[in-house]
Image 1 (cartoon, rainbow, N blue to C red):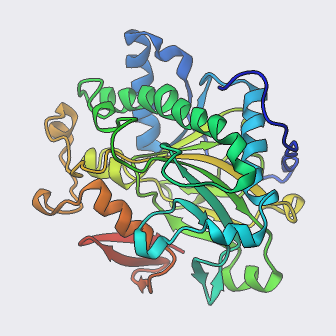
Image 2: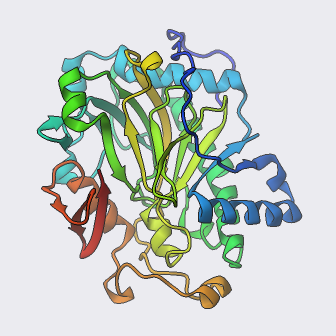
Length: 363
């Protein structure tokens, strides 16, 4: 991270952890410090593969940042919301539907959730190439730290994990690394995200769901764990279970792009966000993420040469000839999310078609 003399900003105080007796998913913990040797990576790859097949989510610990550095990231994450006026936010709002890009602000009430209720979520997105866009005044002194955070996530967390994903499919270690270049054309980005409390009427109309069940559209999502209990995953037995907070841990899942590239072996993980438990209601929920996508020109077709896929078979979401590039897929998914009239299918499932591929949402 950048040098020792850092710009002074207010300290963000997170919500206290919940004491409610919630049902948590029993997720695997990957100790990334053991990835320094090939033997260590082979063992971790088995853990990661089994975690992906069982839950699709896992924790990462010993990633290289201290608790103090973690807290500094959350201090920075709050700045786009607490230190920028609503008027200035509009100046830096992304033209999401037209461009298929989230770069800049996604302001509140942009997404339709359900029953006429719109979201109370605000986020600010910064491409790993931090020079692509101008940033709000309050964030400008912090850009070197945000850039270092993006680079850390990409090179020190993502690339080691991608080697484990590859080894789990018995592919050469750098198979996925080679299509996730830090300097390549693409839109992997840092997201700072804040959920605000909603009215009782909104909670009733949406059955307390803040974001419907969905899959992410990139390859890997890295979430820096925070204490407000709202994130749930859809377990294989059909039950929604909470993700437990672990101090200074990362919560990692795969998205659509990894699903395409792995021939369905690593499925995009279904997750949602709901109203926090009673003892955390009234708090905002601040998140820090790194959303990962392969290089824009990557065609999203399976690595069919994988010995694992040759044994278990390939589950394609479309024919290889019709497969989108990462750029086409991210633009299509971004433009449509929260804007499309979804078609109700089986109970609790709605669908839309993006680039000729069925995309499901769980409600």
